[in-house]
Length: 434
Image (cartoon, rainbow, N blue to C red; front, side, top):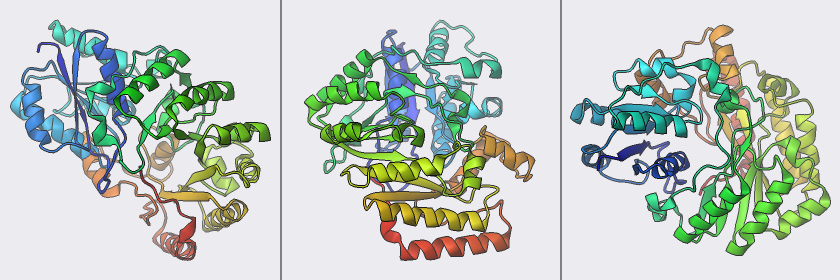
């Protein structure tokens, strides 16, 4: 098969029984298949014997494409690259994904990487693969000035769900799956890795309908998670999509921002209830106005959250939220304020739940640069060092973690207050699962 392209997805975290489909690689597969190339997806999360499969599939493949996330999963990404280098030293290896987008030049210095694809790279990757097939030079110098202008086409090819075995990704108890109707986010959050690709790019409604029909043919899901960074940017579009999925007899959930959900009136909330909305996840992130400013969540963010919780307090629709602790510049007083806000919001709406994470800087974000410049925090200098660092410092939900940019005394006091609060209020935490 002279037109085969192997795509590798690493294990993102340990201890999970079920995983979402590799939507990023399925998007690549859609573009490759529409151009007479044959994608083969190898997913370390759901497959055994990955090393042998990589060796077998790469034997007659054009190249290896690897998704690279900052954190624990880089270990798996590099393991796949090493297998390719050892058995097929001349086979091109191309990295893509958030880590490659944030640190392209550093990533390309690794002997394991021939080139990188940054941002929304489906068509850039296609171009490289086509050049490889023709024996042409596929390496292109990275141009940071073009990164923000790289946008996805709203009319991407239909997602080929038959490229993978969907049964490996579905919890038979929940029968839940996920889908993206858009890329990007208009927010300016300083901790978020989408900051270099701010523009919100919705797919056409026609594509969304075709994808969902194709997905349902492959697996008859009963809960659909719209995994967009933020789903409620355009409420008319949301209603058109959820009207369409009623034929699947499925309930659904999504993420949203406070400045979107706060606009929903009583009639719209009632409509969402009738259309089987189960839960909206809204990023509270903090209850401190000072940390809101550090995070650039927008003026009035906390007040909007209070208004939303009051608007939904009698609704069967759940509201879930994430809260980030240990942000650079946060104080003990800020922590106490956040915990107070969490308690108050939960007292207003019984089915309001939160999940916690301790801040971990992502390369390229504003807070990452603040840690480098103002805190003199030393980050890894190579792809291999990032893999080692990620394995040791990967974030964990609802668990205590170190805060290396705090003084030891402050970290100790912070941990004590955080721990005592959750020991007495564990019922407020969201149990994460698929």
